[in-house]
Length: 152
Image (tube, rainbow, N blue to C red; front, top):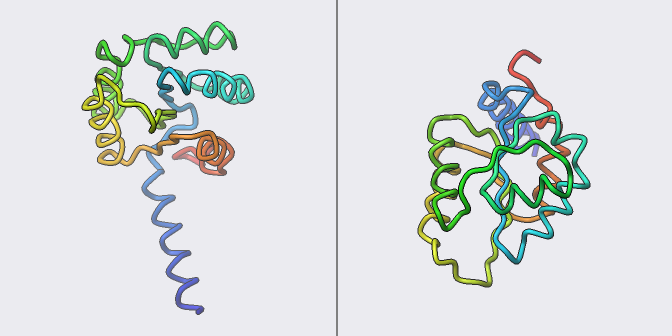
C-alpha cells in the first residue's frame, strides 16, 4: 500500500511539472451549446471575481450572453456553427488557451458536431484541462493548481 501512495505522489509531482508552463493569468475559453448557455452564464456570474483576473475568450453568442450578464471583458469569436469552435481550436493548437469550459449538450445532435469533436480532440492532444459540466468546472476553478504559476 505504501508503494501505491508513493506512485500517486510521484504522479502528482509529474502533473505539477507538466503544468509549470501555465501562467497565473490564464487564457480561458468559454463555450456552451444553446441548452447549456444559461448554466454557463450562471456559473460565470458565480465565479465572476475569479474570471475577471484572467483573459476570457468565447464563441459569439455564449460570450455575448456572459458579458451582458456579468460585465466581464470577453473576446468573442464567431458562433460555434459559423466557425467559432474552430477558431478556439486554432488558439489551442498555438498553445494560446490554458483552460476550456465547454458546457456541451449530450442529448442534442449539433449541426457542427465534427467541429465539436475536433475541439475536444485538440484539448486532449494539447493537454488542456476541460470542464464539460458545472461540477467539473467547479473542481477546476477551485483547484489549488488554478492559481499555480510557473514561478510559484
